[in-house]
Amino acid sequence: MAESYRNIVILTGAGISAESGLATFRSSNGLWNNHRVEDVASVEGFERNPELVHDFYNNLKTEIQTARPNAAHLAITRLQREYPAAVSVITQNVDTLHEKAGSKEVWHIHGQINQAVCLNCSRIMESWSDVTTETACPHCSVSGMMKPNIVFFGENLLYMDKVDRLLAECDLFISIGTSGVVYPAAAFVQIAKAHGAETWEFTLEPTSNNYYFDHHIYGPAGKTFPPFVDSLIKEAETR
Ligand code: APR
Image (tube, rainbow, N blue to C red):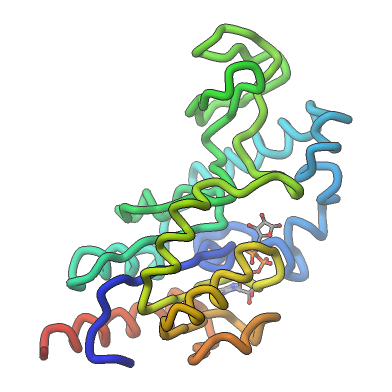
């Protein structure tokens, strides 16, 4: 661990929300074991059966709405508040547990469950209510053109200009709860490392791209990440 860091980037995946009771994607009981990605997370699937896709995300929305942030989310917020550096969160998660934990600078590169985008005027509607094929856009009033603001496989990620800048400037890159199998997010560690960042990975078991991480901490992030934050803050206080 270096003496001090100036720009910290934290990439989070479904694993950070597991201790809040939300399913991950590729574990034995993961979302992709119970639903076909082609049906609920692809442009073709949405065109083929928009009702099925809206139902899937409306159900997920209800579950996510009642979930509470866990110790790992709260530790990120504490790091943002108590460590003298810029701390940005790039999340693959569509849940809003980082925001519920009080974190700022959260970039949802795969979209957000409480948003829908109008395919007529491209503007965003924020809502925790169900969105259906009948829902009218609050901006242009056209109905039947709302899509969950979830980045489907084959679509471009959101906020990539911001992500590129964050990865180019970061000197500490931390990955929490992601299997590192979905690109381009899985390549972020390589980009950060190429720019000289120290890289840490917090997951349950070795992941596909663990070669690029300098350090691996295995175990539930709610248990492993808070002590790591404590040590960073303590280090800064002794400087
Ligand atoms: N603490 C830390 N890590 C955990 C925990 C936990 N409590 N529980 C699970 N994990 C780890 C697992 O070891 C695994 O590496 O979280 C990771 C979850 O991997 P995935 O289910 O593949 O989820 P994720 O990496 O976020 O998926 C990336 O794939 O389908 C797309 O858009 C979807 O954003 C998602 C992307």
